[in-house]
Image (cartoon, rainbow, N blue to C red):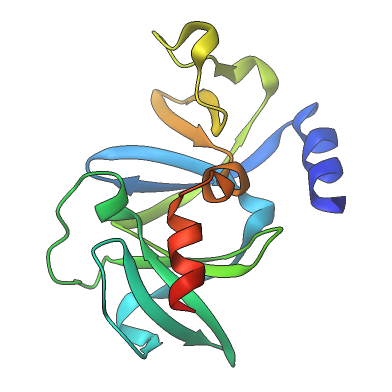
Length: 162
């Protein structure tokens, strides 16, 4: 709850987003939700089952579901390489690891730099914040808590593994 209030307040002056790539597109999530960044190869993993839920991993003594967002977003992941990153998130419902192609940085966006997703009209998905535009880059901004709380979502499946 406190994070939501802090995010809404900080967005008035500029909000920080962690940017990352998936399938050739660049995405952004609220930087306040990021606990740490790890390289996939460095995580101790217990299982490796399912296409999207990559099993359970341990980071700093915390057991968490490991979700391969590369599969969830339709790209076919190859074997992990040195650029395969895991974003460890502290969500309102749990801590989880999110596998992405690579982290590209932290971007601060002012409200005027965020526009609605074109073509979505009023039926825009509840987990899409909009498109962030900064220095010639376009980021698809995602409310990660909402995305992971959608009924039947990746997080629902991940809870059953953990």
